Image 1 (cartoon, each protein chain N blue to C red):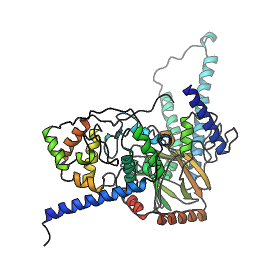
Image 2: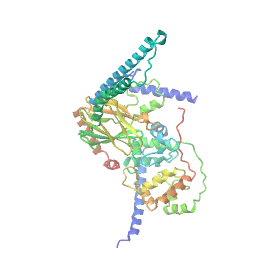
Image 3: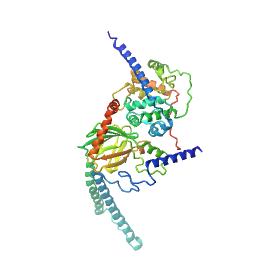
Image 4: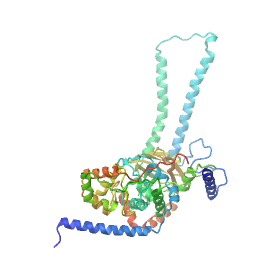
Length: 227
Length: 292
């Protein structure tokens, strides 16, 4: 006989997660053929600066939230995110138009540029203990398992640093993993969808607020006024 | 030391770019775009734009007539009826005749201007029976075009400013003489000549505006709404416009380039575009199609 529905679901979820991570690894291996050049990336980032280089800049449509800080973010993650926007896996009208106009080489260059952009911040190594409510939620999802110690040292460079990211952005991102089928928002990443779905919106909000409050390396760095 | 080096580098880059563009020194008129020392409206390429020009000149002459008449009477009075010549002021109150005159005359003038103008405005808004419908979406900071119906339906692409031009602008653009400076895009909007093209404008993030002066069109592109306009280009060639609603840091860097082709050339373009589409990864395209 087939296992019960719940068990079945869990099993297929785990299998799916495994399969996707395998796929991700293969994709990363393929992408390694391209090496990003930060100096070249700096020449292609005019439209990035318009939002990500303005401290506190808010995206206004379809939802209002602060655009993510991307300076000091992992290059492999930026690359993966841009490719997901390009393919339609992540839905956001403006980011899709940006990603569509970039070649794979452009994406690699920009990712390399933003990884080293901004100042080096020393974040304390010792583990931060989250408040009990949030700790339960984080353990339930096993978030630190991928996103790393203090959510600042991801296990794989294709996973994002989360500590200190804008909390409203984190909330929208988590919410987007829960829902598909909208034309202007939603994220279809198999692993993160599986992770985000069991939570309620209120719980996601708590997680986002906690992650946003952590000290992190991520920054929004304005363009120099002198060029 | 570092600064001078950077400056030198910038000069070399700009020089190289000039050479690359094959331009000696002076900038020339750009057909379908801005002209050197341009004062007048750009040459009309559609019936609507012609009518707009006619209206523009008509109103200009009416204004000029009123200006000459009002200032003529005023200066005549100042010089001929001044106090030093012994003129006494009139001392009447509430003259019905004068009040009627200054109410009725402007009213007639306004109506005389409104009748032909209304006819043009109504024609501008008549987007029915279009041969080709294209959705133009303004993004921060590029245009997305989607061919919705008519020949070439299903084609969609994003049109961005040439990055070389963006870099020239960043370095100060000193001594740069490119005719199509900041108007060169990677994928221009391609349309057939003498066909009614309906443009549906919308925004992906903030309000933009789709405008091509030579066609006499300008339509706000508002997120969450669709607004439309139309044109029927009567000449083949390249025509240019820019986003005309302040939309953020790169507002000046999202040009519109419309390439008007003959019917045969347009059909050939559609064919080549659809062939490359089927050749490209189909997965990406289906994802793209479902996204919008």
